Image (tube, helix red, strand yellow):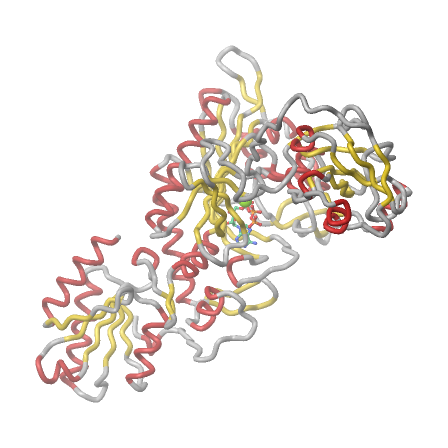
Length: 568
Ligand code: ATP
Ligand code: MG
């Protein structure tokens, strides 16, 4: 491609709206332009990068035996009502009525559509297993679209769905996708980890998220320094270190704590550690108040709470709501004779003689013990893990890092096939629901994540497999016939060898051509200028390590072809 003939509008200034580096660089390098919040037009350069990711995804999905297809973006509400998700799915699901007043929505994901297809088309165990995928535009009306392609409202996803006769089969399908994802992200040239994840509203038995490690990641992940364990914060299992048994239970005591409402203030006043105080927090679980007990120095992991209670939403209750529900002013709530439902973090079950709120203004209770002084509805792992906790698998040291979720594999089980009556006849003549899995990759997000991980102060540093062009040729003598002829010849020869080349034939100063080449992040830059006039050589520069060498025209062609082919 000749630069003069493409649409590649680079910007010198950093657009003010862009908060993260990938967003800044993608706008500056002419990848895309915003149409409205979270909705972008992909310009040719950005689209080419997306197509690179798509090609790798497609190859590996096909290699894993999945079949490509394409499903509609507009979906009728009926099938969402059948699965029970029309009400459950939050406002991210864009719902609308068509001209015949039919309830419809824009697809944020396609479990319902694919399940509807399969229940109509497949009826026998002989047809299974099957895995179908598409690469398609999704719409999710995200509350806070941000960071450019990282969290759009409209974005490109590869989604795949597997159907098996039983759990064992579904696990084989899951494993195949897990392995394919590893190959995909490795081939993209990304540093990533597959982590155990919460399976969220989509439901299901287990799942892994594929996280690209980058400082700007929105997700915190827990990784073990000593073993392979890696998990999303939301899912990271806290291993309770068993406390001493046979502790004598002391007598319950009511103590005056005037004006001491915060954990820290109570602890200072009583001269105790927050680890011996149990706080009582009130959450609204789908609107209903539930008290959560946990150690004074711990934080609630809301996803764990949500999963325990089996609700769609949990949020901290405001002071007024707490007072209305319990009759206790803020800061003095406790589990003894409390008026609302109570659940406890597992650690509380191992504590003895702790301090809690006295359910009365200016009072706390001392020497409180679960079981003796109060009961709870459930005890579970409800808190956030910390780096002081041991690895749940090997007991080793944990580390927290940031990650960008680029892919997600779920073993769904039969939740959709049961609710939507998608049944097949098994070899024993029985009708059974299909056992499903679903597998997503955020194709447009992969490009953003790749840039988060691969850039320097001058711009993008594309991994070779994702670069829209592998080589940029700078013609620095547009009016010099020898230079222009040599640049054109190199362009022809590399292109003929199947390499994607951008020939910068613009009438611009050399300085600005060098700057743009760096910004665009094209792996190899070939300068045709003074050295050619003098010594008949080109200067070849590697974008990643900055190394340069001078080679004659023929050697330039063979060297570049060799290096690029080795990287693809
Ligand atoms: P997130 O937690 O980031 O909101 P999710 O878990 O809801 O994502 P999935 O339903 O697992 O997303 O979708 C599969 C993949 O699609 C994700 O792994 C991610 O890479 C991508 N993705 C999801 N939401 C967005 C978005 N708003 N913009 C760009 N990519 C997205
Ligand atoms: Mg996900």
